[in-house]
Image (cartoon, rainbow, N blue to C red; front, side):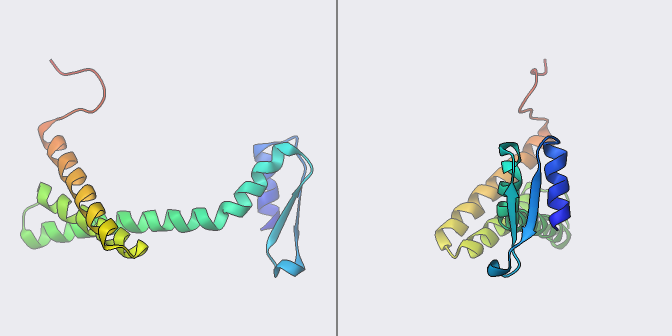
Length: 137
């Protein structure tokens, strides 16, 4: 773990020297000592690593909930590519988000927001709406 972060520091800033060591008083957590200010990014990355991994996994969970719910809804209703399936998937994703933050209001708002956004994107894809680029003539 020390070596990987030191190599990351060298990849980001080849001129910097990072020293990584384990600190027994902190129960084996990694303490990063940087000789150069350019390597301060190593300290930031090592301290934010747990937080970033948690939020990336939670975001992946939200995406999985959306995908599974949309597919199951399409299979149960026997109507593939329906905007309602995407609304149901978005609403389920919002409900999971609300459950994560322990708030009914957040869950309800996220359910409606994600559901309406997903349904509008599906309708837009079906009808050929464009968000960017030159208009079709």
